Each structure stands twice: as structure tokens, then as C-alpha cells.
Length: 331
Length: 235
Image 1 (tube, rainbow over the protein chains, first blue to last red):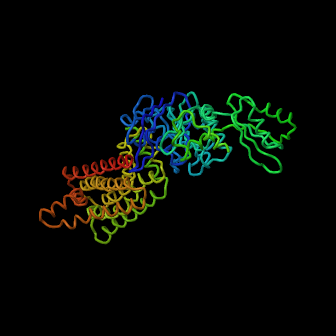
Image 2: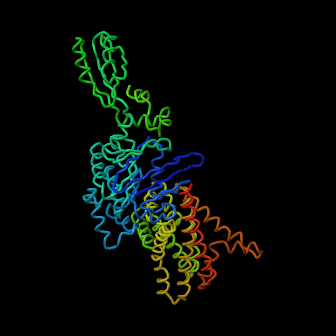
Image 3: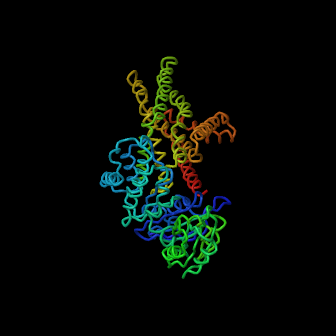
């Protein structure tokens, strides 16, 4: 549906994005994840045909967004980050205007406007001025606007920013409801959003792509080992030794948690769950097991790992990050 | 053509939906009415020629207020992002905006038709200059609007667009004063200056050279606007 190749955009000397390439399949929801100023908006603006790249190409359903810009724009709906709408129009007027400008057939315009108002649940405010709408409803009108000409591709720049938690859930549901019929590219810097909404994630940092994969695979990719944390009251050295000799164990670190309790972090092969055997070992020796938990790397860890400058740039394209880096972020 | 008309229609409605449109129209009618009354009651002149040339002066102040928002406001509020990611070419966008402002200006002129109608009731004036004069006024205003939309394209600030446009229009106006004389450069200034071309229309003459001047001036300005819009996006 969308193919981006080697996209680079300079603002003067400053490279907003550099060598960005990825593909979006039909019917997929792709999340664009990255810190502020990572190049998300720039990439989306280029795909939306708002501005040309310095170099590289982008195509929407096979149409080049620079050479055949108007034709490409027919196939997409775009919601910019600040949700700019004409405040002096009513919702119905505004959507009607968008339908007309985007070339919806004259006899279909009113019907399309009604359909998208229904889909985004703004019908009750159809005749209110956009100026008077709350942020949540503005956002919905923004999405309605992007949908009004029924484009195969939707590009949504931070569609949930500035909404209250309930509105966020509603907008996410709305977007999820588009899956299949529409291809969606959305940007965000909120992690749970990606896990909840997206089929695949592009993590972008400082204008370069740091990773592309499904949310699950990204998490799994960095989870090269399992970790179990145990708080044990007992002889420090003996406990550490006993844990280290468990089958599948790779290593143990320990620290003093005070009050005669030590905290051990047991690292094991990814396919071994050592929690039960560790617990029974403790009981056998009569040590007091105070607490035990499994430490899994969340997508958040992956994200921070990939986007922090000191460790992010180097392993960006490496398949297997070092164990050291993985441990570092779980501490 | 459809996007052009859709944009023009939206702009026209925006003028009627916001205070600025009404303020401009009210101020225009107040001054235009005063000039008409002054010509008849004070000077005892039963023709429109003076009125045309007097009225053009207030257009220098009023028309930039119509054009200042056209692109600058879209840029400032970001709505241009939605407009320009619609399947609309830069040319269609500029043309639509221009036509919207032009239509509003035409409505303003239409409201002054009462003046020549009054004259025709009071006496038997030559009607030719009325028609040609109004055609001249339309074209004349069009050049101002075209200058305005160009300057509105170059800035995010409506205030800058207003002041800039007024300054340029005043400058073009002054050219006609500097051009009084018979030297070649004075003739050139006369030709370049916008108001000089209105005189013939006001007298009742439709000279194709004057029509050509206005139409090409408008076309040139709109072309520059399209280029400026494209350049801004490329930046």
C-alpha cells in the first residue's frame, strides 16, 4: 500500500530524516513510534504529499507522491497533529467542503458526510460551529475529515494527543475499527497505544529507523534471557551458589536489601522458567523466601533501549543486542 | 475546476461569517456613499467619473483587509496542511482563494449600483461610462486583490500581510504621481502604475490595452503566488 524508500529530508543543514525505508501492507495499522522531533511528522507529511523529500521516494498504492502528487493525494486522508480545522464552519459544512474538494461525486457528498459523522459519532454536533467543540470532538471531526472521501490510506499524526483517558480509549477503538478496510499509519510517542492498536511498529529516532517489527516480536527480540528476582533471608554466598548451579542458570547477581535480606537476580536461558525450582531449593535449605518475581522486558524497555542516544544508535540494526545492554535497562 | 469553486465558495462564505467582511463592506459603503453625496451636493457633478477615482483610494485601505487572511491565516493555523494534502494543485488553491475574495468585492461593488441608478432617475446621463467604469473598477480591484494574495502567501502573519499589501499598493499608486510628465521614464511609470489605467474606463472607453494590462497584472500576481506557495512547501 505504501512504500517508502531511502527518504531523506533536510531543513537547511539539519537532517530531519535520513534514509528512511519501510513498507505498509494493505489493511495494516502501522505505528510510528519515536520521541519528539524524531522525524515522525516529517515522514508523514512527505507521504501525505504536503512537502517533497530532499531525496528518496514514497509511493501510495503505486503512485509516486512527488511526481504524481495530486493523484496520490486522492488515495489518502491526513490528520495533522494539531487538528487544524476551519473554526468558522459547522461540522456538516466543513465535512461537505472536504468532500467537495476531494472530488466526492455531487450526489454522494451528503451521504458520505452523514456516514463519517455516524462512524466518528459526531452527528449530534453536526450543526455546531467547530469553534465550539471540545478537544475530543475536534479530534473526531479531524478523523471524519480524513475519512470523508473514503481513501484506502489514512495518515494520523498523534491522533490521541491531548485527550482525556476515556476519549483516548474511544479514539483508539475508532482507529482499530478501520483495520482491514483501510490502511492506517499513525504516529505516537505513547507506548501502550502501539501495543493496543498497531499490527506493526516502526521505531524512529533522530531521523533514522531503529527497528521495524510487530510489538510482540520487538519485545521478544530483546529478551535474550529470562530474569527472576528473589528476595531471600539467608547466607548470601550459599544462596548465590545454590542458584548459580540450577540447571539452565546463566548467572546471579546479588545485593544487600537490608535487614538480613538479600536480593538476587537470577538470569536463565529464555526457554527455562526457574521460578519453581528456585523456590523449592530455598525451602529445602530453610531460607526465608520473601518475594519472587519474573522480570520481563516490556516494549517500553525496548523503546528506551533503542532511542537513548548512548545505546540506541549502535545496536539499531543489530539483530542481537548484548546481554549487558539488556540487563542494563531492566535494573 | 470543482476544487476551485469549492474553495471560492468557502472563502466567500467565510467573509460573510466573520466580522471582518462586514466591517470592510460597511466602511466601503460609508465612504462610497459620502463620495457620491459630495460629488452631487457639494460639487454639483452629475456623473460617476469622480466617484470612481475617489473610491479607488479607499480600496487601498480596505482590500488588503480582505486578502490578508487568505493564505497567512491558513499557514498560521495549520489548516493549509489539510488543504494541501487534498487532491488540489497549488494553482487551484490560489485561484479558488482569489475568486472567493473577488466575488466578495463584486458584491461590494454591486451595492453601489444604486448611485448610477439614482443619477439615471434624476437626469439623462450618458450610460456608457457607467458600464465601462464598473468594468474598470472590477479589474482594478482584482489587481489589488492579486497583490494582496501574493503577499499573504509570503507570511504567516495577517498583520504583516495587511501592512505589506497596503504599502505596496500605496507605492504603486504613487508611481502615477511620479510619472506626471512627458519624459520616457515618466511614461513608463504611468504605464506601470495601476490607477492610470482606470481613467479611460471612467471616461467611457474600454481600451483593450488597459484590459490587457489589468488581466496580465492579475495573472502575473497569481502566478507569483502559486510559486511562492510551492516554494514555501519546498523550503
